Image (cartoon, rainbow, N blue to C red; front, top):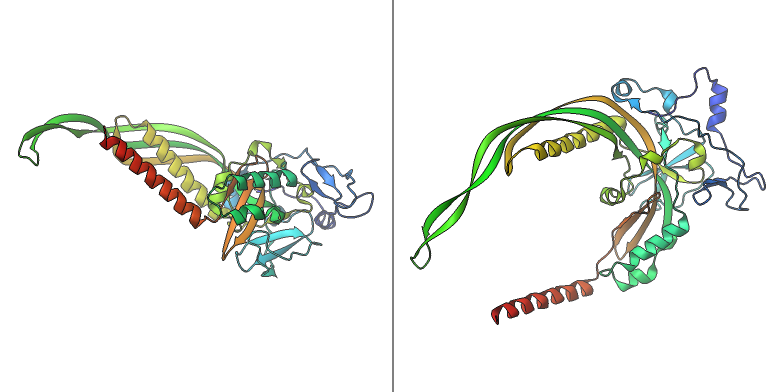
Length: 376
């Protein structure tokens, strides 16, 4: 599931790895990952750290069946000292640098944070997609998103709220599999017959009636699933994440603690077993759709798909988002930007005044169309 410690590594060596820090060579402050420079940079004096990131690592796709039987402790931990806090409001578990003191939840803004003690360390990510969208570009993108919200209250647009934008790494599982599916169904072919009937005035009329001729059908297909994503976040609303996916997994980097230095990481709360189940259900649904597309004719019924899966692998990754959480009135809203592609999805309140005006405009347009039709 993640990089295991090298065989024969000493306990002292692994402890040193866990306590690894990225100190600024100029002032001694802790350097953090900078998306613009793609390097560790001191947030206080701006010095770029000479610390290098190990790019020689290989991103391994782990065998799913083997992993579900036995996942060892050598694949746990973050390679750097971290602390956990859990939000009592949204239940998200945030992982942050040990020296950082969280005042509010990054996901919902609640101040109800409590220390979280995990029974075991979280599985170490296999790989990470580093932020490439900078904070300035994220704010500009969200301002542009605000400008397109015609139905939002004017007060919301004036607020702009970009001071609450936070960068967060979200936990994802990816799954690969080869599928061999055989299907059977009844294929329906449309044909038309002429029917005689009596209308309301007692006159005899004819009309075309569609009929369906059912025939047995069968087929087979093979399909490869590659890096199907299953999000393990509870801090971000699922519909918003689906709107900014996919993440370009082809650009994944082998996990290195330097990439997450200074950033908040959400700990997964959907474990490997639950994620594998969700992935299989999504694969079954996709196979059913692909099989349905092979059925000849105009419609179908009684589709039965029997699939065999092989080469099932997985990995645990971190994906970057910029997150805006804000309250308007008594409600809470989120907006999300993909930290690599810049795709945005968001929730926002609707102005009842603008909704009323829109309804009136639609009603007027319908009346005009009906009026023009009447005078022809």
